[in-house]
Structures are given as structure tokens and as C-alpha cells.
Image (cartoon, rainbow, N blue to C red; front, top):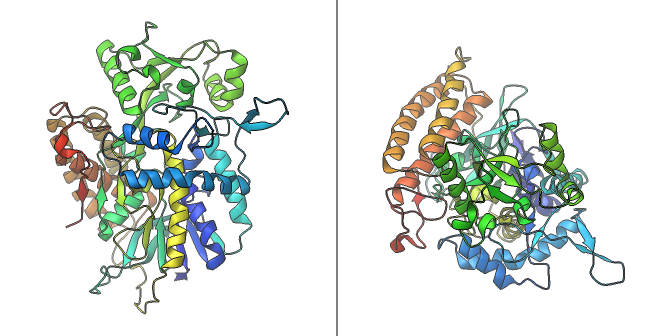
Length: 532
């Protein structure tokens, strides 16, 4: 058994920020599925939304967030996170984060932050490191973690399930005691015990056939928390990023919203701008509006993609502002300074998740959730661009403060080691790969950008059948990482479908053709699920 003071599941911005805050107080284990830099944070291109300009204000940022959230944001949470943002940004810069700068307008030769603008924002407030912001954040935080002797990182380790007092048969308040963790290299299962466990596992993009997320985004934290008895909410609100590069050899490459923020325009294959008729902000409309408009344009014309055209900007500006996007597209034979970019929508961000307060606390004592895995009420029915990294940064700080002020008493509960029993090595891994593909395809076809009651019912029925197969497979065979991830995406797929069925309206990212209008009775109403 591995005993720590803090167990952090995930090595993105949320997990690393929390670990760095609590490391001076005790031993920290960071469990991460692949190498330490592989996280959704690492793939974030746009940046962090925060008020750092004199032309901006907290009130404007709050208003933009509430507008994007389509009536479901919790305003007190929005205000807290927006107002805490600048102080957390300053801490990140102190740790070594280097945001892009530009020449200040005054004549003293100084520099100022180069603020970008993205869809739904009324002002320029996106701090970025060109178009590789996430990579720069990971570099700064991992370097800081390497200097902290109390932090130990376990790479290629995948959490299987949370260990709770109720699961061990103890009555009273349900308390998290740690997690069982699969070591990919040895094939063994280890027991990690800690009085505080934090889920920082990111989202669930791989539940869908097309996604901007890396392979690790299989909804593990949501699935584990739900199985442990924590409530999960608002999973119907899956944000589809409007612009993923469309190319047979380009896997999950995101074309940042910042391209549209700097003047990029969406066009049909015939070169006609189609967003003008959809929203006053045109190509800079909120993501749910843009994704549906692109989906409608593709279905109407039969096209496999649309164009994103930024050739109206000087080539030098494009190359300097978007060096990663420029080089990647060039590798696929697309010169974005001279020709438009073929783009399609793809699953991008999970707005719902494990129910927490703004300090990351769940209903299970000792269990916290921070970042994309959590549902704080910040995003409501649709996340405002670049608010996700802000939420991860602020809530990780608040969670660290909370655990240091409210430490749980030590427990004498004995945690049993993992038992494989009579399980044996799987003989037909094709079952796992087939079920994995089927879930992702049916979610894309039936529970995608546009839904209907009939499609949701079909998805629910098929997922229930698949879960029976997966359940039998899980208990009869020795665990593998593919089987564990399949089990989790099946659970998350079920939660998305059930939440979508509960909401009889179209709101934000949830668009149902059978209920095309928003229902005022559902304003400020969550769809909450608990394991029975």
C-alpha cells in the first residue's frame, strides 16, 4: 500500500496547481495515465480568460459568461472565479509562465500582455502564449513540481475506482480513502491511500467518434465519482468545438477560436459567408451557435467540411500569431496564409461533471474535483471560450485552501488490497475494441450536436446492452487499460444520454429537434443523477 497525505488523479493545470499548493504541507502523489505532460491542458491553444486590461472589467466578463451559459450559470460562482482570476494569473507568471507580449502603446519602449479575443467575449481578455498556451503552462508547472521534493509523479498509472468507507461496508458519512490504481507497465493493481483525494482527470471527448481531445480523455473521473456515490450533473452539455482540422491524416487537431478572434471568417465550400444570418457576432458567435450553423450548412449542402478563411490578414501576422497552427497545416499541404482551412465540428469540452462547490468539495468527505471533471456552475449550458483554464486555476487554489483549513481526522479503517480472484487474461480483445468503436459512433450519430427523442432512446437501449457485456468482461478477466477506459466511456455515455432525456427543451449546447425552444421552467435547473 502506498500512503500519502494527498492523492491527485491527473496532471493537467488543475492537478499540478493543487499539488504545488499543498506540497509544503505533506506528501503528494500525482497519478497520471501516460507521461506527466499528457493532458487536455497541454493541448489548449487559445489561452486563459481574465480581466487584466483597463478597457475591461469584472462586470463585463461576468456578463459574457452568463450570456454564453444560457441561463444556467450560478452567478455567485461566476463572480468568484472571475474576480479571483487576476491574482491566480500573477502567481502563474511568478512560477515561470511566459505569456505573449506586445509593445505598449506609450513611448517608453515597454511591453504589455498581448490579449486575444474569442467567441462570446466583448473585450480582448485572453492571455496566451502564441497558440501553444497549454504546452507553456505544462512546462512551467512541471518545472515547478520537479523542484518540490514532496511531490511524486506516477506515470502510466490509471485509477480504477475510488475507495470509500461505504464501499468497505461502514455506515455513517461516506468518506473517500484513496483509490485502486492500475500500473500499465507491470500489469498490477496498487492501493493508494490518502485522507484527501482530488479528481483532476479532465473530460470525456473520446466518448465521441470525432474529438479535439487526446486519447486520455475517457471521462474516468466522472465515472469513478458516480460509481462511488457522488452526484453528477449537466452531462447533456457537451461542447463541440466548431473548428477541428478536416484532413484524413490529421488526428484531433484543433484550429483555435483565436483564429476567428483575429479576423478568420467561416465560409461555405462555394466561398459564401454563412454566419451573418445566424448571429449578430457572425463568426465570433458563441460556440454552440457556430457548431450548429456549421452542422446545418454541411447537412444542407452535403459537404464534408466548411472553410475557415484568414487570408485577409498579412502572412507575417498569421505566422507570428499562430506558429503551431501554421506549421501543422503546412505539414498537411495547407498554407493558411494563402488558402482557407477545411474545418468540421468535434467534441471538445464537458460542461457538466461531478457536482462541487466553488472550492471543489463533493458530497463525499475527503473527495474533491477540480477542472473539467467538475460541475461548479461556472459554465452553465455552454462554456465561454477560455474560461476553462481560468476555472481550473482558481478552483485548484480554493480547494487547496479548503483542505488545509478543514483537515479530516485520521481514520483507522483498514483498506483491503486489490483482489483479482479467479479472473484470467482476456482471450478476445476484439470484444473490447469493437464495443469501444460502437459506443463512440452511436454517441456521434445519436447524441451529437443535434438530438431527437428517438435518437436518444436508441442510444440508451444500445448502451445498456453494451454495459452488460462490459460488466461481464470486467469481472471475468484481469483488467487492462483498454478495458478500464471502455468501462468508463460506457458509464459516461449513459450519463450524457440520461441527462439529455431529462431536459425537455433546447438550451445552450443541448439541442433537441423535438423541443426546439428553451423552456423557462428549466432556467436555473440542473439535471442531477445519483447512482441508485
